Image (cartoon, rainbow, N blue to C red):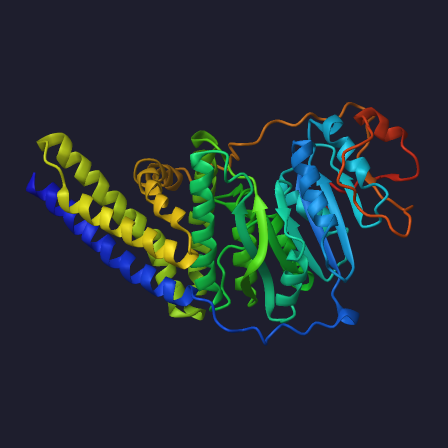
Length: 450
């Protein structure tokens, strides 16, 4: 039984050493630098055009309305075009009034897919029919601050940058104890992990809710992005991480813009949260294998970052497993393991509270228990089931009845002051779409991406 105690102690000490070095260096590199003079000047005459792409699948009307209103309210002075792609939703009758609100806004176009093809193919359907210099992907449950497009565009002035992401917060932070923890988790992921990676122009995942891409770079990678496979099977989730890795492989920089704020809806209960984490863990493991080839050409910190994120949890899991076995067989508490994990939790949460200047981060210590007893087993299961590509959270969409066509709402007629209204009014039923006026044009090539 001494072997169990020794193994647990060695594992947790190794984890403590690795985590201390990794987190210390990460915190150092995540500190803001004075780059105010780099991208302040922006010529309104030469502003790049931006296409905002919003894929939707069974999104609630209120949530979608808030998302589109935030896009319509952007203060960007350049050309802005919005493509809302309905990915074969079964609730089209419910969201049709939201669509109708923006049909007189010349900036908005609605692409209606005949059946659910997945978020990635829905994005590609819009990318291939749009033409803006920059492409901003926005999740349909995300609300953007009014200056997000402007700030991301300013960062993208550097032609070496292929992608940039904004800072994510939880729009439903106050709903439950879990949403509060996830909001803090997002802050740490953005302002520690992404901020440190951005120091070297190599953010490893430009998160899906709010990420901007350079079209010229995107077009070079679109076929690879669309046809991702893992062990011979199509891989459909983890699109944001995979596209970011492809950008880095192509030699482009990927950046983080902390003052471009996007608020997104997060799971408010454990079951959907764990499903989300399982999907993300599989995606991370898959693309980490792809990203290993990049490390030799990147700063050495990125190697430490990959080791810290992948080896650290394995050491912690080994320590926890041997400690629990020791307790079960001998009724002996692995004190060293408990004390070290507690100490590291207190230090990390205290540093976060100081950096964020918010005492609520002391409560993030509760996340350690979730990590130890829920997330580590989920990651272990993800590692053992990497070939599984189920989304886990998708509901089946209703396929249109025979004779109901796939359409694109073109919005060719609009007044000079047309903007997206915030209210939800009017009603368009699915069967009415085929009878619509000249605003509707059939589109048979969207599903294939042509």
